[in-house]
Length: 254
Image (cartoon, rainbow, N blue to C red; front, top):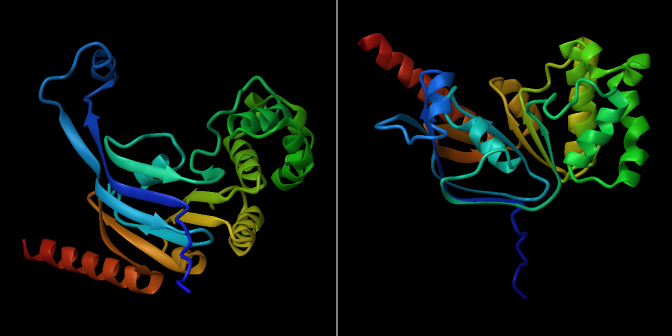
């Protein structure tokens, strides 16, 4: 009897994405009406092919501009490829821009429902997890105050609390552990570890090698929009560290 293979929960098939670089907002606005001539471009992703399987925790490492954020934004449906295809199966929660989608005039409680609707959740389900979110966010009476009265840290706490309590099948994390004071950060980290243990697929971007080691068993090294290495976290971080050392040595010789 042949072995049954698990289907990937996320698939990148030869994915490329190019951004046009504008000098200023005026140029960006003009481009809505007129196609720019010989624009400067940045190829954020270049022929990326990748499979992520259910229950995996995968770290994405690389320098700034390597394409890490673009990769995550495609999984969350914020941006789309110019070439190739991205397939995502399951409910996605993203710890990227934690305060995106909030209405400043609505209360924290009302924003829980607003974010829930944006994520495609049923009214009855949001009601079921509402108190869990409120307890986690630790905002006290502010939960019934307009979000415009919140500090940026309070908004982030509410955003984090919503995303980690919707029981996602896929959790996307981009350096979002720096939320609130030390005890709240510890609570956030513990929650992410619980989510991983529950079998949720996790994609984690961080500049901290220790955090990637702690959370992920597999890691992918991106450089200039391409996959350089994909393997165990230990192996990937070793390849990344060696590449960084070689680059530093090259700069010294110049």
